[in-house]
Image (cartoon, rainbow, N blue to C red):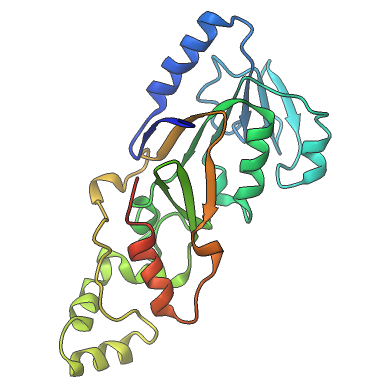
Length: 243
C-alpha cells in the first residue's frame, strides 16, 4: 500500500528507523527535505535542503519558491530516494501542487502536518482556533490525505464557546438569544464529536510514510457550499473518519 505507516501523534522515531533500514541497503541514499532549513530535525540523513532561505549547513541547499512551477522544472528531472515535507503544506494556498511534485522527485517520503484536533484547539491563542497562519485542516482517511479550508466559522466549535453550544441546543428562545449575541454562529452541534483534547498539543502531528505515491484531495473539491450550515457539516462529518 502507498501509505505504510501513519500516526496523528508522533511518527518521527519510525521515520528514523525507516531511513536507517534504507541506508543499510543503500549507503548512497539521497534524501531531500522540502522547507526544512528552519528545523533540520532529520539532518543526519538529509543530503539536500530545498527552501526559500539559506542556512548554515554543509549540505546542498536548493534556494527557490516551491509554489513556482518554474523552480521545480529547473531541477531538470532530478530525483531523490526519499523526500521529507514537514509542516509546510498547511501554509500553502495550493498544497496539491506541491504534493504532485513531491511524488515526481522521489519514490518515497514522509509528510507531516498539524493534526485536526490541534487546528480546533486554542494551541496558539484563545482568540482563534489552531495556528493562526495555517490555511487548511487535514485528515488522513485510508490512503487519502484530505484537506478542508480553515474558515472563520471553525471558531464556533472550540470548547471556549460551550455557552453558545448549550444555548443553540436549547429551546427556540435560547437559540434566538444566542443568535443575537453571536450573529452568524452555527446553531446546534456543539463541539465536533471526534475532537480529542489529548491530541491537541504542540509537538503532536499527523504524519505518514509513503511509498510510490499517495492520494491527496480537497474535501468536496474545495467547495464551501451555499451556506454556513453546509460548511459546518463538512467539518463535523467530512473530517470525522481517519486520523
